[in-house]
Length: 296
Picture 1 (cartoon, rainbow, N blue to C red):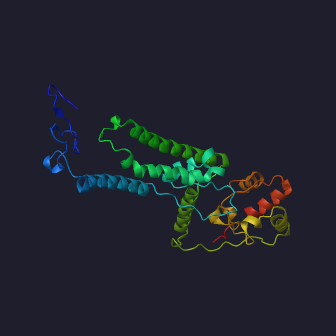
Picture 2 (picture 1 turned 135 degrees about the horizontal axis):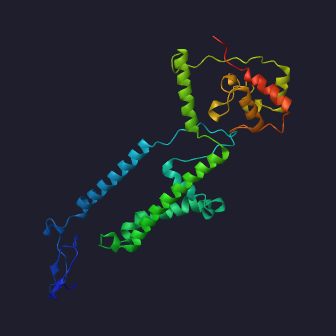
Picture 3 (picture 1 turned 180 degrees about the horizontal axis):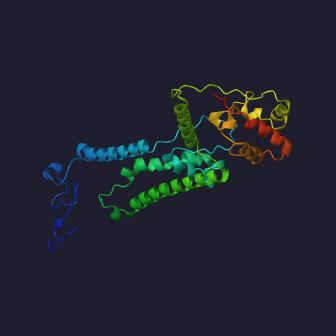
């Protein structure tokens, strides 16, 4: 390409756009990069080392994010917990939301889990071979730049959409995330241990049931309400699955609160207003309200 008034001047790229060479009468063979000290460099190892260093900085930054915002540890899987809302780690939210789309889920799940990610990562690996242009400025490489910006925008959009949907589901089901419930229970246990003088980390003494052989309540629990199906034969529940124990439940809820919970349901517990009469609900909640820890 000619520049200025010198028609015989020709630009020859040798790794840097600042390197020029005048057209020769013989075959145009660019000299080695070492002929231009400070203006060009070897791809291996000089340029490749710089690329690796940039990659290391990006990786370290991502690891810092995962450490500062760690993925919460949920309870073990419980097939009886119908209100559980699955949620992946935050850095996989965009893939989680992507797999909800119509043509990459259901009958097309193989396309969503293998096909599209395979094409994306394959294109990334082949990018140096597909885009061999010497131009480094991103605005001079429109196709590559547009694909990059579209990918970044898609990741941010899908991540936000997934998080908003998760918050919406929590609001509809009136659920509290597992990690928050676990933190609250751990804090309450520490406060109780501190107030009782019991060393932290040691299991608390088991609270016995009050009037466990009440025949009326026993009939409701065993037959009509079938509480044992979820709370267990010993009525100790399953704390990991969000199912409370009947032992000491009177210390956590008042009679009025228990009536509301049994009648209308709460979190994982269904409503029993259609299964039990008002008298049976009163009998059951009166018995539950008596389940308190023995006075010291």
